[in-house]
Length: 256
Image (cartoon, one colour):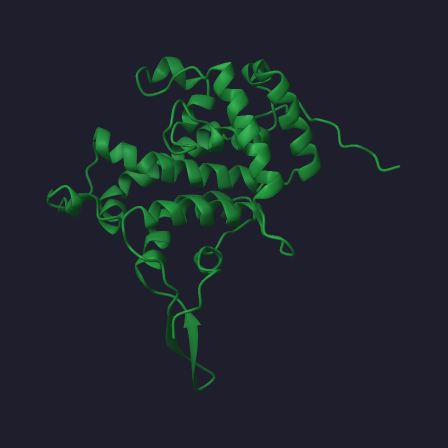
């Protein structure tokens, strides 16, 4: 008989909080370019700032940046290998007993599955990912709230459904790549811009060949993935813009 996977409820050290906050701060420093790429200022008839401000983002800017930061953080944690069967078993434990999250000892992938599915009400999942980082409730009152057991349970159920039903048959994706494709693709489409693949000519061995690259979505990814790529590079890991573009446009023919 096959051995059933056991839940993994304890991880000695959880490092996702500080790195994810660092990535968010890096996004804030580049917010002029990122938000311009999303049409943020044009939609509001605001002039695009001449230079990136060193101050804190406005409330509206933060609303746009937090889902992006949540996608990067979720992808960073997904890069830590944890068997899917163990992850599912652990999420089932949290579904049955949401108070387990309050111990602050759950493995990183479990916390982030919950974080990227977490909702206070009807906002996009993962918008308030920092609620799951409980240490920030006191430091950022009004921005970060104590998660409720009901919402934790709902997030665990949603995460289980995505894991069990979300992947396409016959294909195995790097989970970090798929998270980025799903979430960043949705964010970019929300700007009203289409996502298309494009091929650019380059010289290789004296011949012209066409490689994938360029276009508004490609350029957007190059901006927002920089903090995550730096984090992963320090750990011998990587994500590439071209891979995310291919995953997002998998159901559409490539541009000629």
